[in-house]
Structure formats: structure tokens, C-alpha cells
Length: 325
Image (cartoon, rainbow, N blue to C red; front, side, top):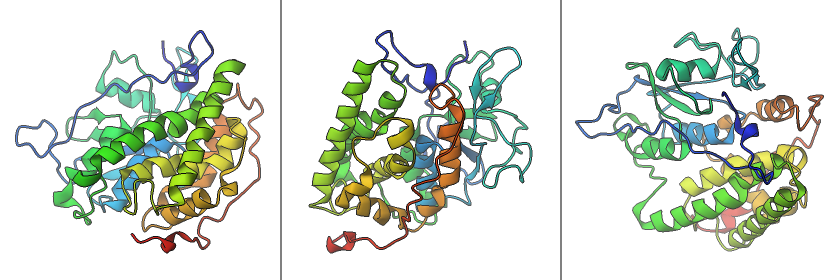
């Protein structure tokens, strides 16, 4: 049965995320089925989705936006097939329907679901973004953001404008992996565990874990510029995509409202610092983010009303340059 992330709830009422399905790799290995050729791959994203925006961030930071094409689907989930009631990512009907989103000119798909069915006619998993698509073989290479960003970091250096930028440097791998784990559990996935919980107890557990991790971030960022020290890494990208959505969406829509992030001076200035890194601000479309969350989950927001605020200016000055980098 077709399903989405909203449906991933256990009998206890807790949200339990299932693993991604397509896990092939683009590799410089001469025997690779998916070599890193310029112009061969396309990244399907939504500007609303933090997991997809991890990948878009790497695309922009590495200077791969000419070698790998990308496009964004519509913000608000729609019906994906006539034969069932599944709602998910769809493509707009024209370029003018929603600025920043466009029809699927590559495959002519009306929905992301159709892309999965082109790649695997009997596919039974979730129809998620991001999708790293092989134009030549007309298939999904990978739909796991944590693996796509690793490919973008190393495998496309031959066609990247910024090949020397290494966001997963060898001397920090252990620290990055450790940080990714607690940030994912406490923050990246934690906000969804709050928002999609269907009983009080799993929500209470999740929201406490979210703010334990937030407090940990605040303490670390009081001693160093970035989350793994004074070097900007993959771990910062993974953390940033959730933090930038927190006050605008998660605090309200997912009930993560014990405190707002702009009440944390180190975190708030850190968000502004990362946002102002060349290429990062182009990955943030707050109108897409708010339209999607408030308009796509009728069980959480039945009337689809989008709050006006807080409309934070992340381009304003920050104090993070007090640390060396």
C-alpha cells in the first residue's frame, strides 16, 4: 500500500522512520555502473524538504550546479494516483504555477511516485525526495540523502568548481559521524517524532530529547564556531537544514515549543553564519517550507492555514567570527 512519512507510526503512537530503498553509488571506480559524468545526473528535490536541501547545499557548495541539473517539485502534497488515496510530492503544471518549482521536463512525470515506478514498476516503499536520477539509464541511483551528499563531496571532483572543498575531511570523520548520530536522533528526526506522534507519552519523550540536543548544541557553539570545531563540515549542513525550519515551522506545527531557537544566542547566530556562507541562502525558500508543512498535513493542520510570522532575517549580522575558522 502506498504510504508517506505521516503513516510511519507504531502501535505505541511513536513515529518510526523507515530506511531508504535505492542505495547505489556514483563512483570513480572504472567498473562502476554509475560513473561521475557531467550532465548525466539530475537531482529531484523540494525546497521544503530538509533532507533534499542537504543535497542541494552540497551541490551549491561544491559548485556542481552546472554538472548536475536539479529541479524542485510543488510545495503541497497532492494525490499521486487515481486508484488510491495516497498524497505526496507532485510537480506543478507549468513554470508559472509556483516560482521555484517546475514541471518534470526530464521524464514527463506528474508525480514523484511516477519516477519511482519508472525505476521499479513493483516498488512498494515511500515516494520521497531527494532522488539522484540517472538520465542515461532512466533510474533512481540513490534516495538516501546521507549517501548522496558523500557522493557529491568526493566523486564529482573532476567536474566540480570547488573540488578542493572537503566537507568530510579524514581528520574529522570520527567527530562528524558521532555528531551526525546525536543530531539526527535528537534534532533532525527528533522534530518529526514530536510532530507525528499520536499519543502523549511518545511526544513527551521526543520533545525532551529534542531540547536536550538543542541545549548540547548551544553549549558547544559557545566554545567553537561550528558544530565539530572551527571547520565547516557535513555535520553543519545536516544540522542547519533543521535549525533553519525550527522557529518558522517545527515550533508551531510539530509542537517543539519549549523554547524558540532565537532565544539561544549561540545557535541563533550560528544559523545566520551558515546561512550567509556563499551558496547556502539559495537553498532556503521559506515560502516553500511553510506552504508545504502547513498545507500538506491535514491531520495536524486541517484548514491549511499558514502563520504569518516570524519572518526572521537570517542575513543580519552575527557574532560567529569571534572564533577562528
